[in-house]
Image 1 (cartoon, rainbow, N blue to C red):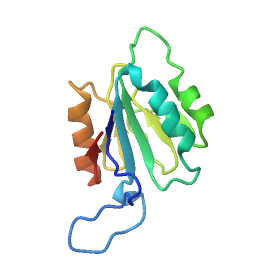
Image 2 (image 1 turned 90 degrees about the horizontal axis):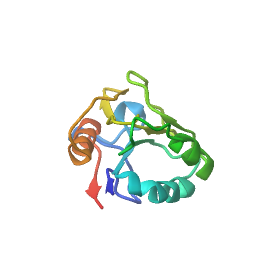
Image 3 (image 1 turned 180 degrees about the vertical axis):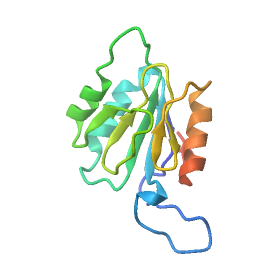
Image 4 (image 1 turned 135 degrees about the vertical axis):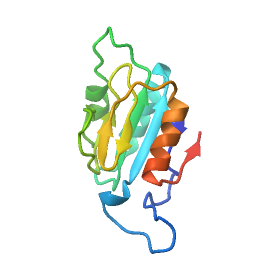
Amino acid sequence: MELAWVAGRSLRASSGAGPLEDGMANRDVLAIGTSAGGVDALLFIAKGLPRNLPAAILITIHLPSHVRSTLDELLARAGPMPARFAESGEAIRKGHIYIAPPDRHLLLDGDRLTTPVLPSIRCCARQRCAAARARWAWC
């Protein structure tokens, strides 16, 4: 599983010289990428999240497009945060979980989500981190 957040640290990012700032303009995100076998880990994470997490959570998971997924419903029931499949062009909001649609990835374009077809989760997670200027670690 790949995480784009270092546990226990603020997700706020700075372009360098100035102080850290609050607000979605800094794109505070927790980006997670996993294979289809990572559902239990996602449920565990969702269960432990605080309702007022000051970040949006972006999840990219291998899901087949020929079967309807209920992952959004499972994650919403597992923890206090609302979860939904992302729509391209949708604005991100703190305290929400966004899941890449089946056979898609999830990227940020400014403060909006895009759901392109990309070759790998690792590539996608790195792009999310770079776009968000977030601290990240591979786990």
